[in-house]
Length: 334
Image 1 (cartoon, rainbow, N blue to C red):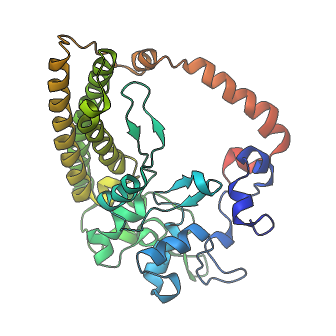
Image 2 (spheres, rainbow, N blue to C red):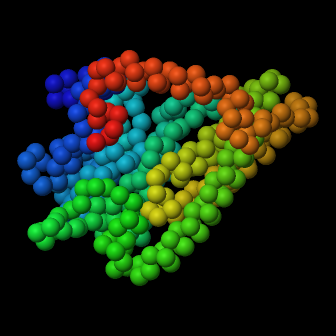
Image 3 (cartoon, rainbow, N blue to C red):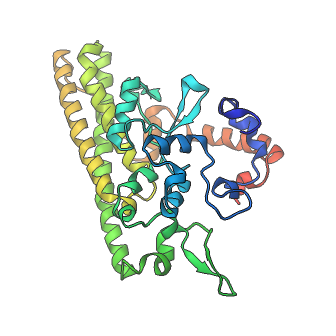
């Protein structure tokens, strides 16, 4: 990036630069070169923290540690008008509502859904966003506290463990001071996960039905003025479902926000389907054909995706490009 500039780097093809990968995460991704001092080298992260008035150099070490992780563990998109530069859409804030406002104001979409014609938004692992509003954040507990706890070497010297692991693997070091029982914590997390997963599966089912109901309406001659409310409801409901479920560790990081997002998504997609029902009635559509998506194979068949072909293409790329020209770390991750 230093050689090519931000614009040049952003506009480059990942495949063309892949052979330069020598490590998945470098020391300099998180630290000032040659020291333990924390750093925030990614331009998109520097810009984002300024947008929400949390400039890196003005924060204490706790928030700086979270921001370092948030360089990657955050939702972002590629600006098509700016050489596909990485941008974190926090101009209005970093909640699902304010990010949606930004995207809607710009009339931005990632792709047009091929079934319903909905302009779709994509959430990319918004861990920092969820954490920043959590009970953990209010108590100064960060990613580092739980996933990289302090440990000691054979000589008894304390250091931060850089073998990033699941928080429950570090329960005694990281969690026990607040959560007395690991068994009780596991039981609580399992209950939270079951509740969130049930809500997510319900939203997913409603979304699938809505996409195919929209298709039936378009096929019957629906117009955009007729479809606008329902299409926007699909867009907004799917965005909130994605903003919840694309986040790694939502069940522990901020389950309250996850439930709120999925409940709102349910409300929005229910409204959208009610609007679609009215349009379908106006167009005298009496029956909508829904696909069988009860298994992965049946879902693939419904959208015409041939997994074997995708796997074959991937393996060919790995054999002809990665294995011949890229560093082994690109395959192993370490």
